[in-house]
Length: 77
Image (tube, rainbow, N blue to C red; front, side, top):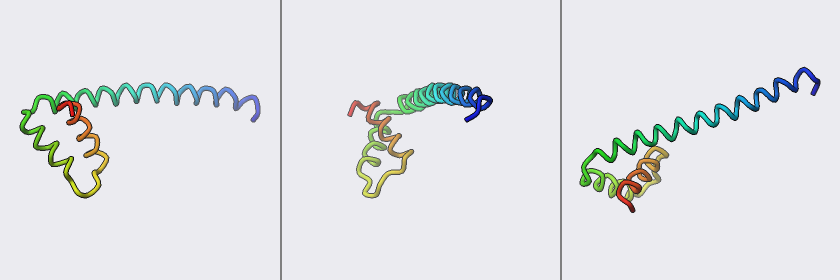
């Protein structure tokens, strides 16, 4: 690689790192919002949804697996 390209490569690496850090923070905030939304629901509703998701015969979609994980954390399972 020639000299002119080295500066761009370093900057793009730093930008990717910055984007990764910001994205991680954004995902943590979204998870906290979703956990709060689940926590506001009644325990019976959460337990019913946990039972429904945990006993499904077919594989869960990614969003369902995430939801089940959040329900486990809320219900301390």
